[in-house]
Every structure is written in C-alpha cells, then in structure tokens.
Image (cartoon, rainbow, N blue to C red; front, top):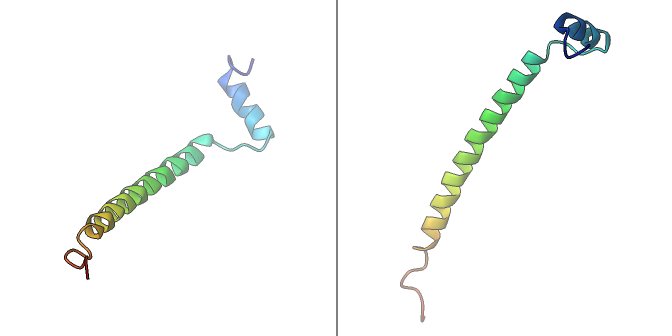
Length: 63
C-alpha cells in the first residue's frame, strides 16, 4: 500500500516524524558539490607542490 498510495505514504512519513525529504536531499547535494570543489582545489594545490618539488635543490647535489 505504501508503494501505491503516495498520500498514504506521506501521511505515514509524517506520523513517523519524517518531514519532506526534498530539502534534506537538496542540502546533501549542495554539501557534496562543495566538497567536490574543495577536493579539486586540493588536488590542484598538491599538483603544484609536487611540481615544485622536482625543481627544488636542482644543482645542489654532489656538494
């Protein structure tokens, strides 16, 4: 019955203390998007640090 009757399903969700799930899902999507941006920024920063690592100390060997 829960699968067939949306109104009944929403009523049961309300009785169980569940609010409209859409705002929760929207908030989760926004958080995942923010985390994705942070990961990309960290990857770029790390790539820059690793790239600079190869040039540090050049010409100082053998001393």
